[in-house]
Length: 416
Image (cartoon, rainbow, N blue to C red; front, side):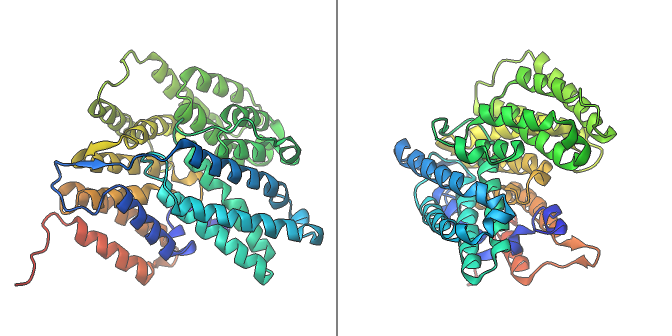
């Protein structure tokens, strides 16, 4: 992946394939009951979750397959060693079967991101397998390596979902460096191990000095676990105390740590009881987001990450509820998009556009839908902006127009 693609928040629309995203979005709409023409006061019902063993079994097998592949993926020499060709292709084919099964199968609960993520995951594995067959091995390696970001992004949203602490991964993970181990353990929901690995990497003066950008991105990933998953201000504070002792950190990173510590101190001093209703929870998330927006000096100012992580965790839990009024759901999706978009640079893809689209589908032809479309349009425009101006592909423009019509407050009158 080149730097321009990594820095572009929505370039995955064209890069990963419009059809895959459209299919995933459609699947999500069907699952969440979003294509209904029922009145906004009625509820959005989520499907009954399948037996936990079925999903957990697939995830166990997926993580085991990834554990076999990752030591080969992260090493360019091993990946291109002919002795490993057969194993790599066999495991990638197995991964392709599993990814397709996850995409087509029922998802546990009503996680709003699973349909999108499993669709993109399946698309990428298919491209990697095709690249192996055509001899484009380096491209295949990059695609396989990037797929772990889907797992990490999904599994660090909240503490919902199975954890896999009993896998026999010692042989393979020992071949990974500390950061690679941290990401793998996060992807397989072994959060305590992930935090230990992150701490080992982040307290290394050499990493902080040699690659401050990677250091800061990794620090934010660790914070996403302590805040979103663990929901623990004390653990977050302890981590930051260890990080601020590093002598080789550049001034910008030190400033970020100071801002994060301030947010955690405010979090620790809060005396409010836990929200008792969904409305209280969403209102608290909105307050966190609006306060963070006021304090930010520019859109991707990382100083307010703690507040955005807390807000996204609150909203994500709300979106897991089985039944919600449609107007409440649309509002929740809007704020989920805002919170996620604020930290969109943590990975090369993100879900904020999917949240805005879901908002429009749930409550079409309303002011709320128009508000979500405005955010969607701005995000897509930014993703296709560059030194040569704004160049949005025709298929993306057409997709935007579809959502514009769907979002317009007054539905178009049918021709008589």
